[in-house]
Image 1: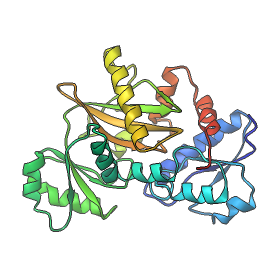
Image 2 (image 1 turned 30 degrees about the horizontal axis):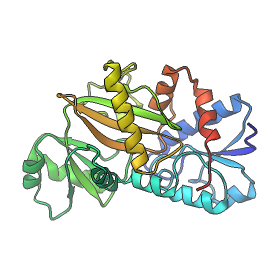
Image 3 (image 1 turned 90 degrees about the vertical axis):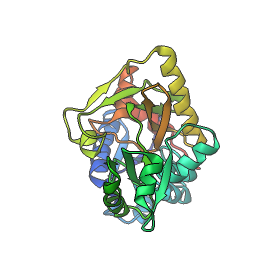
Length: 302
């Protein structure tokens, strides 16, 4: 396909800027390798009016977090009539907000861990008693595990809340699922092979995702074929329930009895050398370069 002039949106001004710069640089190189006229565009350093001035035909969104993954940039691109990769405005906003995601999944009867919204007036000991410990504390609208804590004792819950509240005014405490951590990449209407994640750290945090060399990524994931197919269908159902499209990644846990619990959807996942969607694509013979082209082919407006 002749994609015309393509803006690779990278960087931005979220807490995930550094990861986005790495993702965007790799996407840019891959697209150019395939002959695409791709140019970097950092909204954190340039005014968005330059998107009009430079007459871009398409945009590959390699932004992560706020202003890039939450429907903000998607709305601007729609207003400008520039086709873009990934989910639309509403789906991006919903998926970025873990609280709304969980409420919607619950309405659709899709399994997700129990949770409570935390605030300054919360009785943290009662919350810990209701949900049990350990539990996870998360900012509702951050990615890459930023501001997230695993809390092993009720006395530590207030401290974890204070950390998460630095990143988002909405903070949730979530039941900790002790078991197997999995991630399911989505490409178009297809669920790619599941990846099993193992880390010696307390949980799959920022360092385990982007810096550590002792994180293990296991694909094939080792589950029976029938069980994996069921979980892939669950990932697709979770993705579609939010109205997501194009590509993305669904994170989930299996408890010790094998019951799945959905955690979140990433609508603009990492594309670094540690990232999971390229890894899943590789498992079915799709190179990094071809993956980028397939994602770009799905660019749309609205």
